[in-house]
Structures are given as structure tokens and as C-alpha cells.
Length: 128
Image (cartoon, rainbow, N blue to C red; front, side, top):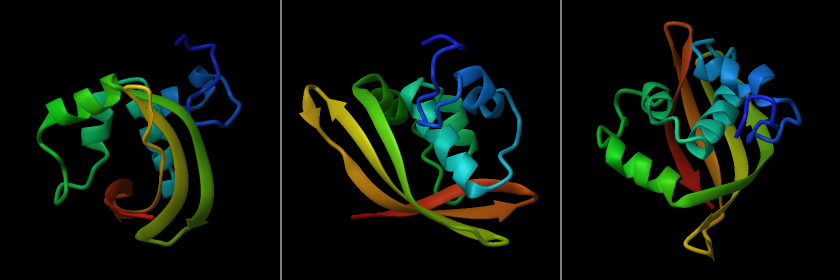
């Protein structure tokens, strides 16, 4: 994927004007932007970004599992269902259309995010 292609998050913007800015160190101002940038990071195999934006209490230290998931998965679509913003805790409910080894592994999740030191982090999620 090139920087002038549409961003994997589904915003309709070019990657260079969307999630690339976060992948290049800009801090997302809310949990929704973090959620979208994490989806794009998975799609583009930006493993370090996934680890960096996961809360330290739930961070998967095994980068190999993240690499394997990204490598073997086609990230086809992200649909945001609901965004509940809060001062230090927020929720994003979404549907992700994914395929792995030709099989549909799509899912819906309500993700929880915490804000610490003016940065949002993914902490956990509840699958539907």
C-alpha cells in the first residue's frame, strides 16, 4: 500500500493524511482516532505501534503473535458502530471484516480505552 492510497481505517482519506500521521508519532486526541489508527496498524503490519498503544497492564509482550495475526489476515473493512467518549475512559464499538486462510474471521467488539498522561491506550475489549 502506498501513502496516496485510501487509508485502511475506512475514513476515505489518503493514508498520508489519516492514520500515517499517528503511525509517525502524532498522538490521537481521542479513543476513536486511536481505534482507527490501530486497525490500520494491524492492516499494515505496524507491530510496534500496536504494542505502544496497548495499555501496559494488558500489553502482549509477544510481538510474534501480533506479527502472525497481521501477516495471515486480510483486513477488509472497519465499521464504527458507537463511540462513547469520556475524560479518562472511552469505548468504541466496531465491526471488523477480516479473512484468514480464506475463512471469514470477522467480529464485533466493544473496546475500552484509558487515558494516561494525555495519551489514550487500548486496554481490553468485549467480543460480541
